[in-house]
Image 1 (cartoon, rainbow, N blue to C red):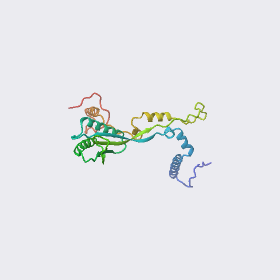
Image 2: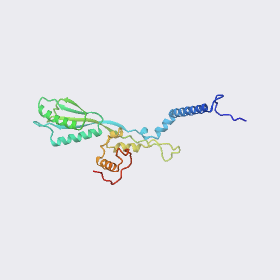
Image 3: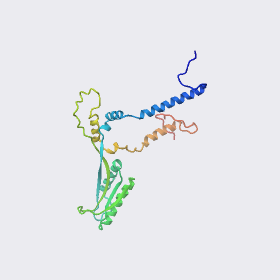
Image 4: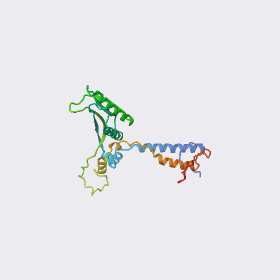
Length: 247
């Protein structure tokens, strides 16, 4: 008795053609199963939200404006040493936590133009050395200020912790084993309260320059081991520890 194939191959189909048809069938099944896994129903989405504190108790953000006021006394010839330190620290904070452009507001008073120009030039020099793009605006001089002021301002995000006030349910008798209303809320709230720079929750910080001292030690050992010679093929590998560099 001749065995029958469980797949409906055409009559007279060669073994090579049967292998190709079988491969196509398996590929089509994998594509269909992969597409079907992406179509999740409302119950699956609800389950993901219940188990994810980021969805149930999100951290909100609000913008806060940070301002530095630089006084411009009469007959000044630029920034004082203390003002230079204040501007430098303010610009470092800007690079670390700002989300927009730096705005420099200089008074457009008819008097003290020379003093304002000298101080503004010193601020622009500090901003250029820091590699920061800025926007310069002219504003009327405030009548409340005794001396003219040059303002540096930027906006930064502030994290708002969620409220964890849903304690109507007795979490000690949770027979369905489902996440309760405040599941993960304390973690989200503590994160928002303790975070030093709220911008870190939105995007990562830029990398610092690598340590050149350690790189020199590693590269010297690599050259001394002979693996960096072009004649030997330039193969990789770990450098020998404690091997001094050839001079």
